[in-house]
Image (tube, rainbow, N blue to C red; front, top):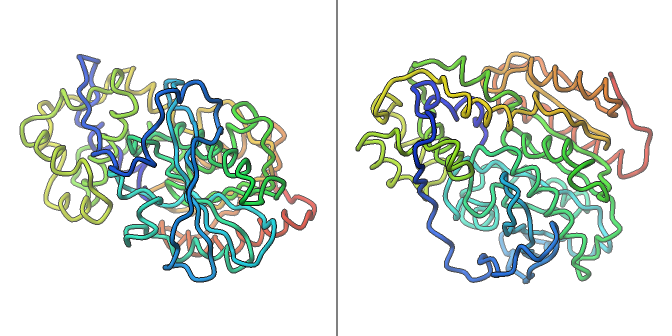
Length: 391
């Protein structure tokens, strides 16, 4: 999801988000592994309750022991869903600190989630995400887009992230029940992380977070949709996928499929289980005009309401945990100003936040530039050092 906020929404600009007329979303092919199937009584559990656990083979990551944890979480409509996270434990370290790392997913297929993409080559930032292991920390990779892989649903991703931490701390054999916890991510993963930090005081008030570190945040989806216009975009495949993901999460409010022409419906079927590279490759020569049954401007207040609901800049809550944000000053994919506005709101609310402005325009270069200081910030919080702020 590294380009989510900009890409989500070339489709918005051509009026694919019209008034509700009976949505018919196309969901991903379910994983045949019964571990990923929610029990019938999932709603009887509390958010963060453990459904089941298992050991997994982590041969690709030497020096680790692997576990997967299924847990109860909540979707954007407030309904119970099942989430899954994959935990890598450093061998020989007792009661290590825990980092929940929200990876770059950029996809709408179940095989693209970290529970599988950590082991099939699809996870973009797997090498960099291993850095916490070198510091002796445990790392958890939640499938934060939920069971329908709802690419684009930011609020959902924050709730799943928080519930994944709750669940991991409840698994006695992992030994992290009393460990300090940090959450981290960049771009789409940064959006999930920042949302989790902002939601924590109300959604998971008992959960103690030592640090929230997040960069490249798509903080205002509505502004980005308005700015995109009708121009072709090299990331159209990801934009289309994000629109489909949002429809999965908001089928009544965003009946996008009803606005697709036959080519759009074919492309929807063709990509419903696709990961990032497939989406980018097959979207290169396509555009929204080819997929839409009409070319109306985005005028639906229902659609705009969903975008605002998933835009951090409009969220009234604020984190109480130590928070470190880094953002490229000239990043054309995830604009700086909404992030600065969000941080200003947090500062006024008394949040212990530090904003690091990176004088870089290229989105992924800013990630590389910012992560070393972000991990150092986490380590300082784990050591109990005073919390810095530049509010």
